[in-house]
Image (cartoon, rainbow, N blue to C red; front, side, top):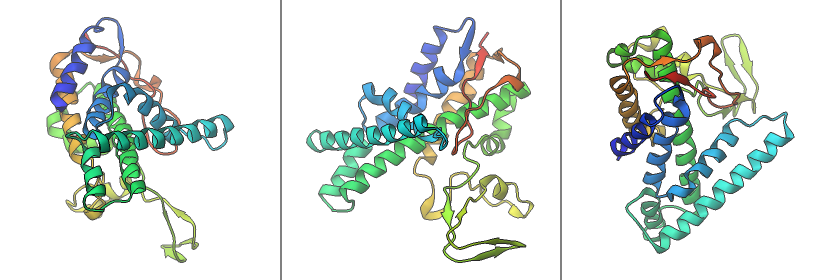
Amino acid sequence: MVRRVSGAAFSSLAENASGTVDLLNQLCVPVPALTIGELLGVPADQHGELRDAATAMVTFDASSKESAMRLAGAVTSLAETFTSVVRFKREVPGDDLISGWVRARDDADLLSEDELVSLAFLMMLAGLENVVHLCGNIFAALLAADAPANWTARRDELMEAANPLPFAIRRFAVSDLTIGDQIIPKGDTVLLSVFGADSDPARNGRPSLMFGRGPHYCLGAQVSDLIVDAVVPELFVRYPQVRLAVPESELEYRASWRSQGLVALPVHLQ
C-alpha cells in the first residue's frame, strides 16, 4: 500500500516538476496522510480536514486567544470525526484498523468506547504529524549537505538527527527529586530529552529511543519506516539534480510546542 500511495504522489509531483516545488506539501504530507487514512479506514475526503486539525493542535500558542479557539475546534472536530467513523465501521466493517478495534470492543470487550475513539485520534495525530516532518527534516538535511548519496550508509544516523520530537511526552514528578544539583519539586512538569539520551556517550550501542521502548514502543514505527524508505531514496532516484530553491538559512521552521518541522521545503527538481 505504501508503495502504491507514494507512487501516486510522485506521479502528481512530476506534473509540477518545472519551477519551484514545495516538497513538504506535495510529497511529505500526502504520502503519510493517505497511508494512515487508509490504514485507519477514514474516508479519503476527510483526510485534508484531519491534517488541518492536527496542525492546529501541534502549533497551539498559549498566548493567543485565536490559537486557543483553533485548538478547541480541532479537538472537537477530531473527536466528532472519529466517533462518526467508529459508528460507520460498526455498521459497515472493513479491512482496516478501526474496524478491527470495533470488533475488539464489541466482541471481546477489550476497549471502552472512549478508548476506541482516543486510540484512533492518537494514531492519526501522532502518525501524520511525526512522519510528515520526519521526511521533511531528512530531505532538508540531505539537500543542505548536498549529499543524497549518503542516505543508505547514514540512514539510522539521519533518522535520529531528523526526529521532529526532541522530547518525550511530558511526565510529572510524583515526589521531590534531586538530579545532580538540581531539585525537581513534586508536581513539576518533566521533559525527557530523546536527543540527549541518544547522544549520550554512555549509550554504548543501545538502540535509539526515537520510537520509545518496551510496552510504550510506537504503534506506528514500522509504518514510519516504510514511508521514509518509500519516499526519501526514491526522490533522488527520480530527480538526481534536485536542489534547495533557497539557501538553507532561509528555510522557515514553524512555531510549535511539540514538534520541529518546516513550514515549507522549496526545491528545484531538475
